[in-house]
Image (cartoon, rainbow, N blue to C red; front, top):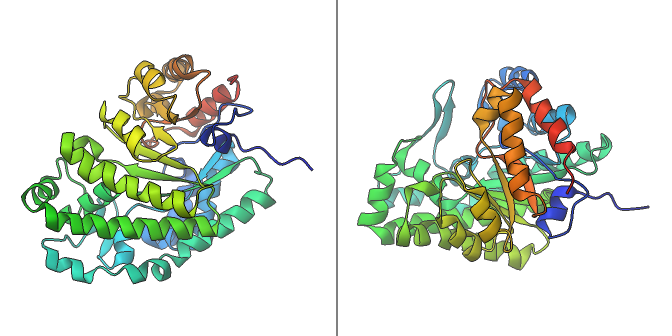
Length: 350
């Protein structure tokens, strides 16, 4: 029996895929009516994340509708601080709220030994999703795990919520870097443990979300973004060498080149502001590329969507790349627009 090819894994492992693969960040989410129904049943966002049957269903929903080549685990980057023992709640319509860390003394509440036990439901979600992909004949769809990168997760842990400039985090890192390094080390270790258990449960690739890399430059970018990401990459290459790693340094600008060269990732996700001609020239000989359709174009649909897709295809055709968005699906996006994207991409020759 011939082995089923998985186009995303082909790209990530430097093989020529049978077709240009695609998946979308936040493809399992609020734009889907079936997601909203399950979310209402769960009662809260974290209840949904920690319910293996419901979370696996959410992971599968866009695959059943659109047949993406990647199924991204339904979870959230803030399950790591939650598992470490920092109080995390998701308030309806307001986003996440954390009991903010204010000093090194708060680190005593963080416990790496809680990771495997607390996140056991997530690992069960992965096992259930692998079985559903197999039993429902989505054999060419790769299951993708993820976590937030240490800098980004630390931003939320210090601020207590999202922020426009994450000033408290930047000030802590600048005024007391030795103390802040201890927090980064804790989150880095937690990320390695979490990703290892995801891999053991059955994910076939992982993505590191560095959503706030655009906040830093120069030596700060090197210390707080590249260095911890390299540690995670080194750990995964040592213990899970067959599992490819995608890094998504959002809004990193030209720093993405150093990120690609120094972090051991196999693929770099590009946000919608990235210069594709530059990326094709400077990055594609080192790593696979992923991205970078503007989510606003997916929201708009029609000719604007078609033109955005054609621009990406023209820039990256013949290069190892995975079509994705430059950020997540906007919740108001019509499902018909996602179907249109899927139809267009399936027509692309490698």
